[in-house]
Length: 178
Length: 231
Image (tube, rainbow over all chains, first blue to last red; front, top):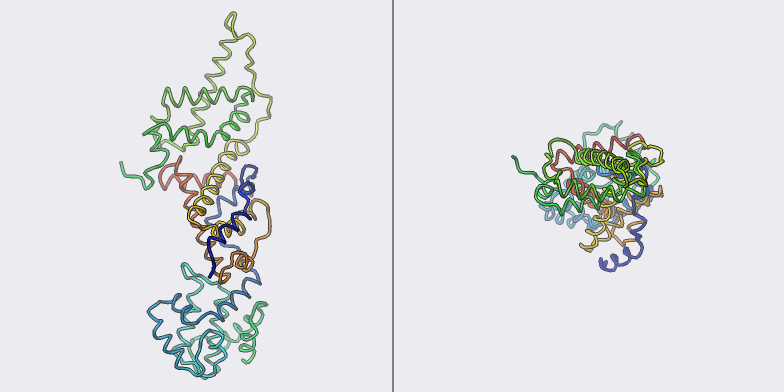
């Protein structure tokens, strides 16, 4: 458990209020600061994406998906993940599992689809694209078709995913099997 | 008259009382000083007197701004128009005293030997600096008060320092470790919260002199246009 009070004390010691001053700022800095609310967030670095993907793959699947899509799907998700052998605890389990229930694959595909635009818990778009293609590929490998994506498009998307330097080894293996 | 979405704006306070106006003057006096020096070229040694006289006579005695109609124009322009008028009268008064026999013969009423700078480099720049300093100070204070210095830290590291020092933007993964968060996504969520707070506070700071929502948007656009060339 993280102690927010301790974090606050540490941050207070590290931050320097005197240096956060616009008194010497020029027009360029003023412009950027005034435009801040409308500016897009800075791009995700390679290490951000690598770490976020690993976190997404290893976080408890039911909570992660339910919190993003709708808490109402939680009971159904719990049932679906427990009925498999071995049980699916996280997305990494799902991508390595030989027999994932079709409904579960479809829900995870929806999760990947909406994650980038989630109002409070958005994931980087490239990361959600990788998860989206990965679940479609995983479904295909067990003979399920959960997407209207053409073979050509899927092949192209798979190639794109494999080019991402932050791709996880398990997902790389999944995409390379295609 | 329709109710303003910001009922406690400084404009309304101008009409209600003068304390808020005095607060505004104190807050933005650096901008007024820059204007007097660079635009009106008032000698440095006279600036304090001029400002004090302006506040006392124009704002308090004549209550000029209390009678002002917010719809007539931007507060910054109104303030400068009043200041221009005051300085003209002040100079006239100084000359008159100098000419009068036995008095004021040694008064120095020459204009300051300062090259006139574009307004952008003087009054507006100082004004915008004050707006941003107020915003950033209040953001930090609100984070401290709420016990959420993690929000402040992400804002400072990802947005503020790169603007002020041109330092590289640290990755979310780095901030996750520093703040002991569960994932970089959590750091990204903190940044979203910080940006929303920053925007709200920036608008509040501007609302204190600009007025309603429409005027706030207009003031932000105006300031952006003023500094767009410098970006």
